[in-house]
Image 1: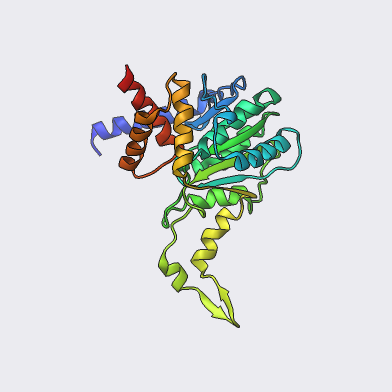
Image 2: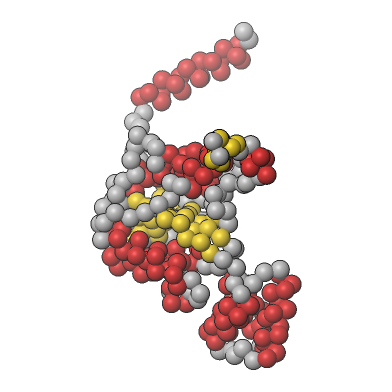
Length: 280
């Protein structure tokens, strides 16, 4: 060993000794003054000026809004409530209806934490942190889906049910997805199913996929808008901008949706912004 290597080894040994003598860094206290958070770098990060959604502005999803409102009301009042999966067509209000819960129940102590799919494996840490506060928390997971080779769904599955660590009474999970079972479904899954005594037995892969979504106690489905529903949202969005849905705007709104290949609330609001630009 050269003299230089000996010197570096002695320096490493010295640093190891110093680390044992230095006091451990005290964890930063969590700030509980916010109502909206995101999970970032292993801790809650408060959100100022969070997106405020009025449920009255969400058209054509009144049934889903009522069911979700009732579930959230049970939750904030201390009654049993379900984790919720909102699935279906994109742009139909799944995310907005969840954000509306915070606007409706914030004054009753409800808080919301945004958690990405990539952070699903940290759910136990997130829930353990939230259990330290007495307020009610909805964990909001948007656009949730998993590929067949993605193992992170197992953490969500265990969190919902199946872990020795129970979900605390002050935490619910509301998730949105374009997939009913959160995972891709293939023809092979159906071909692997069998018939026994005249009864269809789904394949193991189908059972595994269904077992994840089954752990959400409440499912809310969202379907594509009809043309009239799409135009109804366009009308509402234009009126908020001081515009009207006259014949030129109606024709252009339909062309706008056709070019995008879909009719939904998101595209309706995008058209309203586009049409405003044409009038300025």
